[in-house]
Image 1 (tube, each protein chain N blue to C red):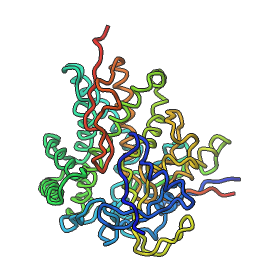
Image 2 (image 1 turned 45 degrees about the vertical axis):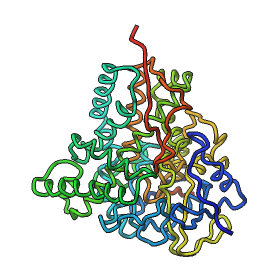
Image 3 (image 1 turned 30 degrees about the vertical axis):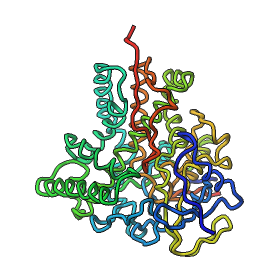
Image 4 (image 1 turned 180 degrees about the horizontal axis):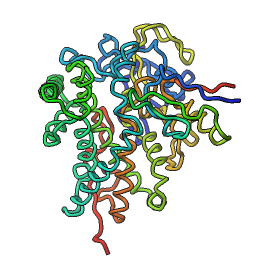
Length: 66
Length: 396
């Protein structure tokens, strides 16, 4: 099952993932880094959004497991 | 063989110089150019290469490195201020960015929406009450983002003419080295005094909160300088360029007015096609790196031809076309990597509110000067329009 992996240590808080899918991603109020709300994409549409989020994340903090 | 001088004049307002397109479409996508400083730099034009370069720690953002690409003849005035966020490499960069990025989250930006809507509404009221034609740059494009960043930082807006004058001098290619140094000094002295006042009397604004969390006042000064300059002219230029583009496409503008969900994708496309801060993605190699079959040596200056990359046909279908519903967000208009624009979500929201409100409130808005006769900023480091005369009909 595909799962989103977020590395808050690499994250620079650009918020691109939140813009892509606010149901899956949030940002910490303290330091703006990624907070995963939904690690497993619920359907194909959510998976597509996750793939976009991975592609456009500027700090390469997101990945998908196989 | 001497490397050709870097061209900076666009073929048209949204098309990169032919030289940049040629470099992008060459076998390697990378070529050497001579900068105005006399430095010979690698210029890369493909999106894939630029994204790789900007996420590779072997390329440094340290502007104090003697080989960092320079677009002026003089050395920047490093003695005047400490390095700001955009000049820091890991491991210094991460903690510095995390100390402030909480101020720019998507949620925090949404919280600013009502106030920005109010500011935009008031400026459109004033525009409608004033003479026709009028210059939209002075009436709307500049004052809205200026007022927003001033309020956010806690800088008195009453002093905006002072910022405007000095930041324009800083960003103009025609300013003398002495003039540029003076502009930086003026802004620095002003901000240093303001920060001293906030240290003595804490304020609940971005600068006040940075001081309250224990940041060194001299680091807060560098941050304030960066945010003020970056938040001032860039959004203003995108507002003006966006208004021209939308007015030139009445069919698509009508669709946008019908369905506000179309505005954000349209903004992404405008960001992509104009790439106003196209040379902000510069670095210096600190190790040997191979990209596109070319070996870049440690110490070589590197330049991302960001606008050419944002028109890269291998990354975007019909890349030369403006497609307001394209919705592609893999462009590098806000940069890429750890330095990607801190204020990008503020910029998106300001543009969204301005376009939605302006075209709803003034449906008959039109250019008072033909689009191809407007004074575009080929003479500045950030692309835009100096003056944008518009007019409109009385409401029926």
